[in-house]
Amino acid sequence: MHPMHHPLFIQFLAYFNGNQDYFECHEVLEEYWKEVAPREKTHPLTGWIQLATGLYHWRRENFKGAHTILIKAERTLNASIYDPYLEEINTLNLLNQIHLSQEKVNNQDPYKCWYIEITSPNLKSKVDAFIESLPPCDYNFIQNKHMLRDRSDILLARQEKKRSRH
Image (cartoon, rainbow, N blue to C red):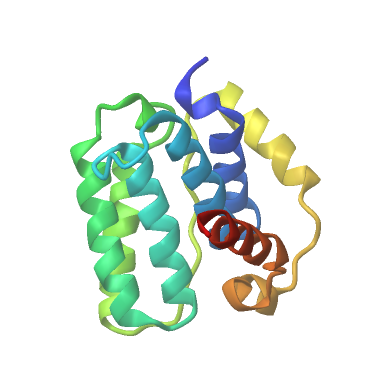
């Protein structure tokens, strides 16, 4: 299977292009990254994660955070331009969009979404099918998801880990 056709990467593209849920983009790709290249900071998946994180910060008007992480995303993805994780999209357009986003962030312009141009018809159909399955989302929830989501499972896992140490 081509790495961009992994279900988690398809979900990433669907959240990115579908409802711009950059928090979920980060979550699903971090899971994928941990499967294929844990702790490998220069892996192309880290660039994709950084991109989603940068756009999440920009939408929340954290211009400093957005600027810092978008620079890292551009650097990581540009260094991976011939990697399979960038094969089935318009890579030059992606890098241009990241650069334009950096300029807008530097000017403290309001957030404006953009889309990843998928060049593979097969990948595009998989992403479009997943987008169709996405439930409607409240903009405020997506913008502030890190504060509004249910974290009970995370807190429970932390408690279990803490107990196991004693």
